[in-house]
Image 1 (cartoon, rainbow, N blue to C red):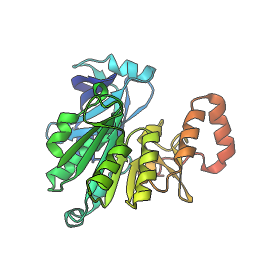
Image 2 (cartoon, rainbow, N blue to C red; image 1 turned 60 degrees about the vertical axis):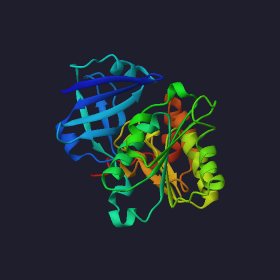
Image 3 (spheres, one colour; image 1 turned 60 degrees about the horizontal axis):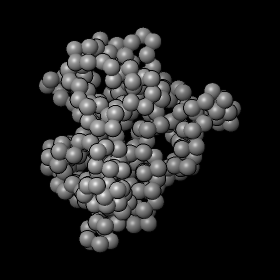
Length: 292
């Protein structure tokens, strides 16, 4: 059992929890995820690691209540325990695998939207702790649903806030903010990391391709099983078939077929749709555990 040590409401049905999980905290890295299961009958909930404390043995998760499983998790309070907390899963961010010397030659911009701010935070924090300055854009529809702004201010060199309705910060979305920084303010970036809703990542990738800036996206929004067995996170990346949970979640944003991924996500919600995908995709429908 894994005890909940902290529970905090952030915004827009988004919750933060610190979970006591020493073995996971000891091994996890920015970019990876965990699977939470509240009890024996509960569904598997893949959640990106928002933060971790190796000394305290805690892992921080952030989730939005979008279905029965997350509603059930929301009902848990400090002192309660979840049955399973499995991880770390997936591959760590490719950036943290680069040498500090290489990273210091880069000029990196992180673009996050919605709950995607949570998985961006540990990467930016890691950069700060290793002496790497990065810029960050947090985008939201309105000020009321923005999360982790203060935490991000502490670790980013420059934090830019954008809201679609102009209620806070720059008026516009993440792409508008990128255009403002690059085209109007003359900033140059060697790499962009975009994490958020798929539609947001799609348009960021289209823009950065136009601007000739290599871009990493995190495809964690499409995970279900988290082991590659179910086929939900199957992706077309260039001319290859990948699975977000075992091959990612990070991929080259300019190679991901976002339209196919979003279409599959819609189909996967129904039993008929899942059956059709399995029939159509054959042996490439699922990727196994990736370790067998």
